[in-house]
Length: 321
Image 1: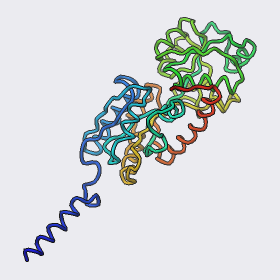
Image 2: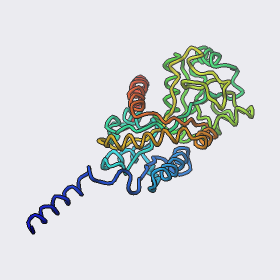
Image 3: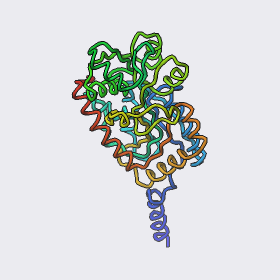
Image 4: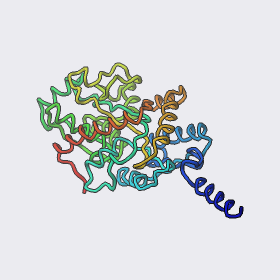
């Protein structure tokens, strides 16, 4: 009897430690790694979703800001994390772009487990009112007639979405404009408002108030549909330039090997939250669009962006050691 009792105890102990018998995920604190400092749009949305997910899952979801190296530090942290669902990454399309730009970014974007898109935003093509154009086609015509004269600001340094949008414009429209890089959106926008540069592919938060005030002239948006906050601005495809219909997206990723049941639970929760009126309204107020796509959709976007931006980067010969 004693031997039987011992064997029964050992049998139960083994299965108690087995993942198949473990409590359902999540059963403790989840870290959501954000690759940018507190206060920015990614951080604000991350904290909004973290609080909502914590309510839904009855477990703390803590935002951890790990800025630096254009988002690579945060990506590396999650890339090396155990695939248990307790360390997730909220990153922008820069995660894909950086792997094309950097000689050694410290991760492979195709080894992350896609969970769900969270939000995206369109870039608005804006010019200073002193530039004598009233439409996007006017801008292209002027750029072709006066090569090397127009100046275009970008924010975020080499390889940032605003910079690559400038290069995409130059390549696909066949124009020669002068790229003027800035370290942030605020100084770039200030110089555009002052007329020190002529144009910019800018985010809606920093563009729409000045368009409405008449301090900047909006010409187009580069995304797949018109922007609800400025429905009069045409998109690239309507103007004969479907190649410009690309923008910046943000998504949640897990480390490689994240179990399918965790991916399903997390993606379904994010998709539900993305349909909540409060979430839609709060993102909309900042010029952002709630998405909440499936893991399969996110995987397709990762592949598509790699192809699009890879070509732009190679043709522009952009690289970071």
